[in-house]
Length: 147
Image 1 (cartoon, one colour):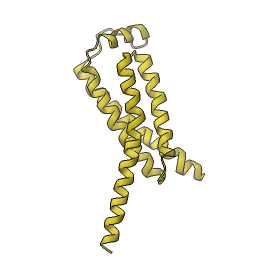
Image 2 (cartoon, rainbow, N blue to C red):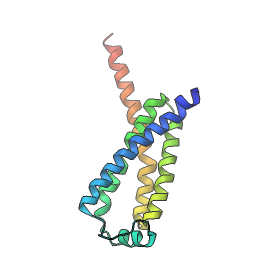
Image 3 (cartoon, helix red, strand yellow):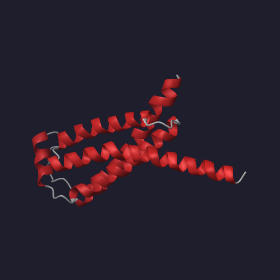
Image 4 (cartoon, rainbow, N blue to C red):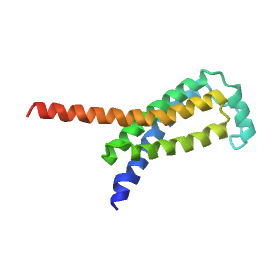
């Protein structure tokens, strides 16, 4: 039971936070780059052709959402797990990478965008973890200095 509480649920919580933020940015992006009328989203070739037709600016909000989502997911996972080490948040990073690879492959991201996406999903959970540790250390120091 302790394993669920300190390892599994923090990763699930971090993933949910990351996914909500990422999906929000992707939803906004659809207003700027709407899918063509009649596009069958179940047709992989049609979806990949649409993705290939998009300009580079279409990826800005996607990458911003992924960065913020992965960062906040890393913060959430670290906070819920209470761990100082990166182990539990690393599990979130791996999960985000696996889902991101599937998403980018299925949608047909160009190779450069694929690599940028991988870097974002690999680095930003760690940055969120470090930010939370820094925040907690400063909070603790502030409390101790006022006592």
